[in-house]
Length: 152
View 1: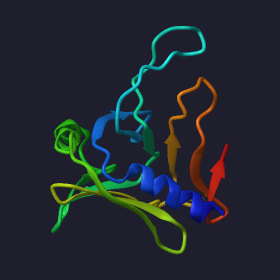
View 2: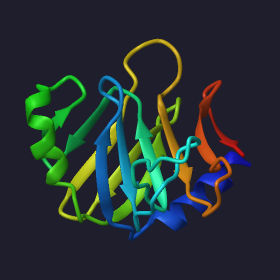
View 3: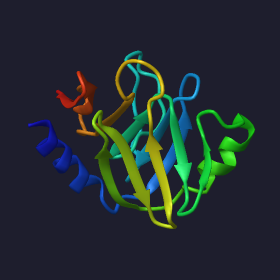
C-alpha cells in the first residue's frame, strides 16, 4: 500500500519548483516544493511558508551534480546557503526511493540531486508531507521498520 501511496505523491511532486529551503534543528533541512502557502501556528501567530509538498531530511543528506558531491550534512555549514540558493527554482524531474532500506532521491533540473543516506543506527530519516489546505495534520510518508509508511 505505501509504495502505491509513494507513487501518488511522486506524481504530485513531478514538475514542481523548489520554492524554499530552510534549516531545522542541527542539520535537518526542509525542501518546500510548489506554491508557497501561509501557515498559522496553534497560538494564532504566522509560521513559515510551506509548499504544496515538503520534503524533510532530518540528517545525513547530500547535494550532488552529475559528477560530484557539492556538499552535505557534514560539510562546512558556511557554504550551505550558497548551495541551497543553487537549488532554488529548479524543478523536480524525478523523486524515487532506492536501497534495501528506502532512501530518498530527488532529481532536479540543472542536473542537481538531493539524496538522503542515513549513516547511523535506526531508520532512514526522511519524510514527505502533502499540504491538504486545511488546518488538520497533513498526511505524510516516512520509513518505519524498513518500509515506507503512510501516516494520516
